[in-house]
Image 1 (cartoon, helix red, strand yellow):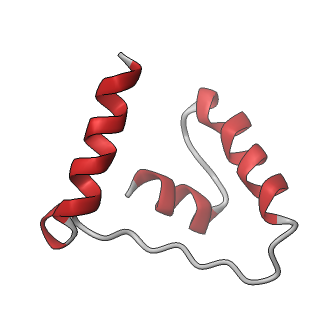
Image 2: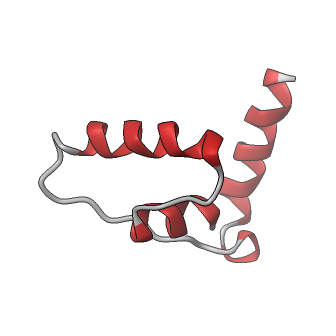
Image 3: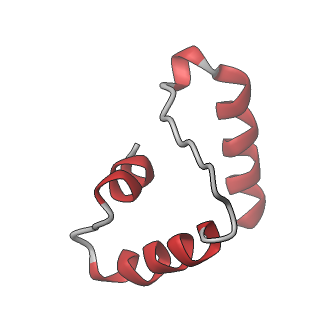
Length: 59
């Protein structure tokens, strides 16, 4: 949700997120059509489980 909000507003209050946000916009220049939507985990439990599994692997 935080990422979707930051991309939609083109802003983040957190200094360490600003560079990441700029990188996102730079990457998106190559995509003429882009759509981002936040879906609550209870509505998309399969994707949520995969994301959590991937985050745990990095630790």
